[in-house]
Length: 357
Image (cartoon, rainbow, N blue to C red; front, side):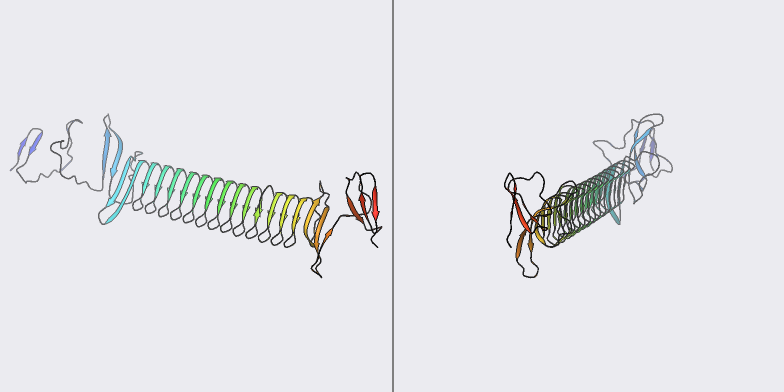
């Protein structure tokens, strides 16, 4: 039989003491065990171990809770949650406040984060890592793709192995990468960076401001450029490369022909294999392989062009055709007058003509 003493319970060796009711110390200075006589093991049910700061009433500063997916929801204090149940090993851990780590081997730390994917990690404020192996950090980011990574603020990495960083960026393609401000990479292995850029083609790359790379393996850079042709490249400002493997550069240039090249100011290369440079070349030229535009302010004209004779496959150089002498010419300027059927050249003081009839 046990001997009961004031403030002490001394059982016989090996005897168990059963307590029906709470076991409450007389004050907060009492200890359970000591440095020299610690308890061998502590068994606690699925309830919490609460860490209290003395006071009237005492304040809960942290909790250690075990026993399943649900996190401690009673009260605003969510200091610490550890989840590892016998037969359902999760090994998840959350620290901070209002965090939930429900995925196996997941970690949530900070404030109001959720790590529900297996071995996922959410840290910061209001982040969600729902994909397996996903990582979300910063503020209100979502990493839902497998092994995805979202960081910054309001970013979303929904594609498997995707990466979104910055502000309002979205990486939805497989292995895609979006960074900067409101950039979108939806193509597989695509990359969008800058502000309001879109890389929707597989393996495409968009960078700068408001650029679009929608073609397969296309590249758009600069300001409001579009690379819609497969393997195309658009650079500069408002240039468009819509042809297969086409290149458009400068400002307002368009390369729509296959393997075409347009570079300059408002030049167009619409024919396959055509190269147009300079500024404001003649529209609709579908016979020249090489064109130098010399127009300006919307007045389009060609300085000269190299044309291919479709019938004989021979090349010819074509100079400008006018109906009268140009005003304020430079020495060496020349043109062909279709009305007189003569070739004219300016020698620095006057126009001289020549006939080859």
